[in-house]
Amino acid sequence: MKLSVLIGVFVILLACIVALFAPWIAPYTYDQQDMSVILQPPDKDHLLGTDSLGRDLLSRMIYGTRVSLSIGLFTSLVAMAIGTVYGGVAGYKGGWADHLMMRLVDVLFAIPDLLLIILITVVIGREFWGIFLALSLVSWVSVARLVRGEVLRLKEMPYIEAARGIGAGSWRILLRHLLPGLRGLLIVTFTFRIPAAILSESTLSFVGLGLAPPFSSWGVLANDGWTAMRFFPHLMVFPGIAIFVIVLACNLVGDGLRDLWEPKSPV
Amino acid sequence: MLLFILKRLLWAIPVLWLVATITFIVMHIVPGGPFDAEKQLPPEIRANIEEKYHLDRPFHTQYLLYMESLIRGDLGPSYKYLGRSVNDILADTFPVSIQLGVIAFILSLILGMGTGLLSAVSKGRGDWIDKTSMLMAIGGVSIPHFVLAALLILILSQTFHIFPPALWEGWEYTILPAVSLAAAPAAYMARVMHSSLINVLNEDYIRTCYAKGLPLRTILFKHALKNAAVPLVSFSGPLFAGLITGSFIIEYIFSIPGMGKYFVTAVINRDYPLIMGVTLLYGLLIVLANLAVDLLYFFIDPRIRKR
Image (tube, rainbow over all chains, first blue to last red; front, top):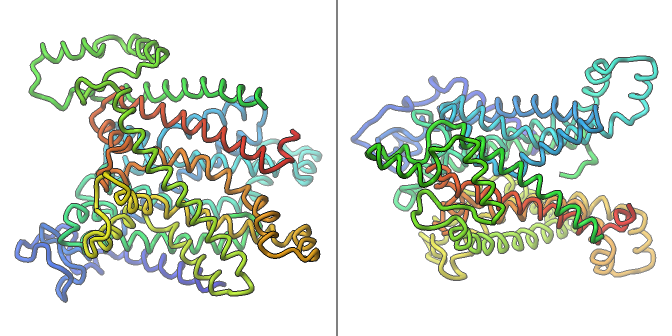
């Protein structure tokens, strides 16, 4: 195992523990206001300082870990599921069905993600579920493309032909023979989707179009900090670093997994 | 060749039509309308406004009216920037976005290919160059561009006053936004370039080059680079389109009067024609960028030319 992968795994595990045990780890609650200590730079009472309502930034970031991580994890899962089924069916069926399905993907590609996300959140709201659904519904497209390409390649392989030769049905070939062949690609894509989803959520929240209060993902915190960055840089810098570190950790692990399963593929 | 280009350009028409239709439908099934925010509006005035913009008509009539004017090349009036047409707004803001996008694109191309080349060549010779540059590359992929932008502003403009923190008034204003925008794609390209060049350098024909006694420079730039660049080409097409139009956040952070900034406010304001205009332009750029990629393949890879 490479050192970088170990570091990545360690950081991710740490983040998961922080997220799970947030109420026990955080020194304050995420919404506890203390007007006597507003906009303090980091000191020993408030390790990362306080915001304009006197809330402890460290505690808000610890609770933010929950939001950022679960958005990353769940949107990636849904995107993977939709993308795998869609791409798998298109690639396996081939012919006009494939053509039609992929043209739809082309069209979705040509519509800016931001527009779709915002419009979806207008319909279902900017609560956790709204952002989660919106991000999942736009990010399956690239998964579908990858899966289709791989299925196209795999289904010409002799072992699939052999399975068909002994009379296996479509479903059996899809589930028992093609899906295991896709395992490497799926795991690697999944690990890279998580940081991408965390990035999308934080970017969205940073422009003020993401999660509505009282949720405090790291992107929301960075957005809060941005307006006052000139005088209180800590409010922007710490959440920014948190996003960077977790995304970096996921990417390191993803790199390691890719070397393991698909040593030949480029980045 | 000409036939190929013509066919692809014709194919763009149905794609754009679908993009327009889907966007139009999605925008209109979303509850609420562009003039809902102004609650003070008396009903008569509101009715007048809606009549002026045909918002009182049934959905399919609105659609047909829009498509009709679209064919004439008229993107309609903006609902929020009164007295300005969407064509005007795009004509004003698009050049700014193009400028920023092109600078960022060139920057990421030079940085990415340069770093990838350097690290791949130094693999085995000066391993630390290879390692540090790849570490920087994975860091560059991981840092969100708004965090990078904020850090750059904090350090280079607020602490050391080297570059202006916002606006768009001369070349010194372009540096920080272009760097923040280019960092991630540059890092990605460096990674792709690195692994693809290493693969190419292990091929037999490169060994032949070495055996012939060619200098490293000739081997790299004349023989290896062309093949190693193939995966980069397919990435750079959508990247170019994305950099030109997708700089929403960077334009927002640096208050750059480009298309992205208008797009965000347009979506929030439900300025239907402006949203449609930006989306269509974006779609058109994607289609053109993909066409450019396919044409580039023609020149780089003779095997594709034969098909």
